[in-house]
Length: 140
Image (cartoon, rainbow, N blue to C red; front, top):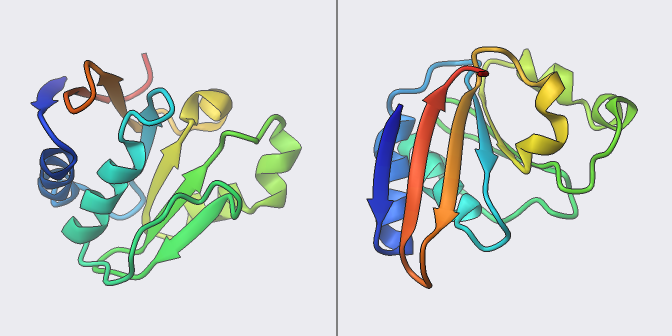
């Protein structure tokens, strides 16, 4: 387990950029954190670390955004996903097999469908700018 305290959105992105360099093809990064905690900021840093050129935005309405980089990045928002059938309909399981990095916001909504070796990133909002970021490997 690794813990980092970020004092700004920029620090969160820098931490994530470094973290991205440790990821391999097929990695699943599962995020937990309240609305506005900094999950999308973390994914922006991941994208930079994976040499993705496109701007990262929240996939709230699209469910998934794809970014090309050294490893492709598949950015999911599972906030509105409620059933296993919905996961199949968005092609979630196919994305797991595509050899990229899957970054999943609101992962607690699909916990049972996540691979056992997923990396969990828990972002806690301490105050307006400060975040406690905890990285844990594997399901508990």
